[in-house]
Image 1 (cartoon, one colour):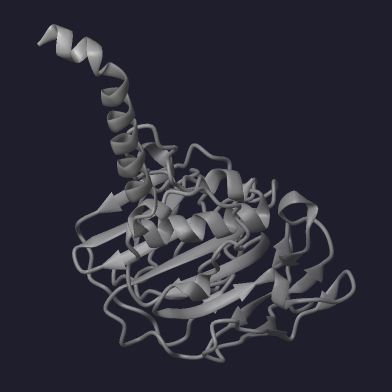
Image 2 (tube, rainbow, N blue to C red):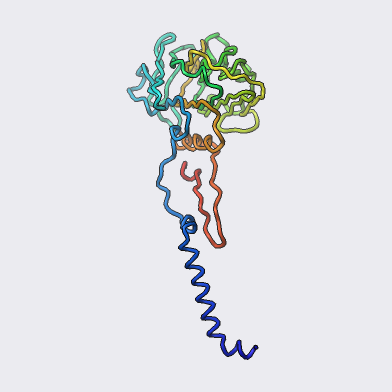
Amino acid sequence: MVDWLTKHRRALLYVLTCLAFAVLLSYTSHPRAQQVVRRPITSAIAGPDSIADLELWLPISALSGADEDEITTWPDQSGNGRDGTGVADAITKPLYRTAGGPSGGPSVELGLAGIRRGHFTLPNFATGFTSGEIFLVPQVLPDDPPTDSGVNMGPPAGDWGTGTQSLYPFTDGVIYENWGSTVRKTTNNPTTNLTNWVVYNIRTASGDWSWSINGATSGNDFFSTASNTVAFGTAPRIGTNGRNLNGRIVEVIFYSRVLNSTERFTIHAYLNSTYGFSLPIAKLLPFRRPFERPNYIDLEQIAA
């Protein structure tokens, strides 16, 4: 047998080489094998309108003007026509500022220390909703709250719940929030300083209510409770509930349900790309066979 193998080894090597080549050719031509080819990424980051049940979308990009122009209308980009209407509380309506926003971009000024500018009213559209989730991008000015004047420390989400008046934050640093609920929640004193630009995300559902700052899922930048009855007021507002937010805002995104984690990561990626945040986002797990390069898209690299 050994003599036979020695005599015919060249022929055997040729046959084995042909078989290996045939298997490789068959594998690489299979439709699923083509899926692992790495191609340049050219698509843009998906926006809030890529997710179902978008009810309201007010981005700073929908506004333009000269510095300190009064804002009469903040156009809704959800397609539902729920524009925000600028209302003067004391001196002026909310102001368009050409700077001061995240990464130095434009912003909407709702108030300053001792100066109540204005807020936005919205149509009554949410009273029948049984759940919801909102993303806001606000900044409290450094001099609020020094003391309780009775008209400052208002929440960016304004009047959306039916509980006691919200405070963002109160003089003790704690956020008191009633958004989407019948009862105001006494929550946390967040670790993140609210004088920074932050992403404030609130979720409400039956027996489940929570908020997070900058995508946190633990610590003082996250709060949750299983005690909740959903309720939305009949006169939703942005920037006031009788108390004004002494600060600025650049984005409001509202859905009539609680998003799943994949959808929430999509919003995070959009906000990272738009405003330069570093919110947590998902990476698609690679589909791999032996000796293949991973086939996945790194959303952190895209957002950067």
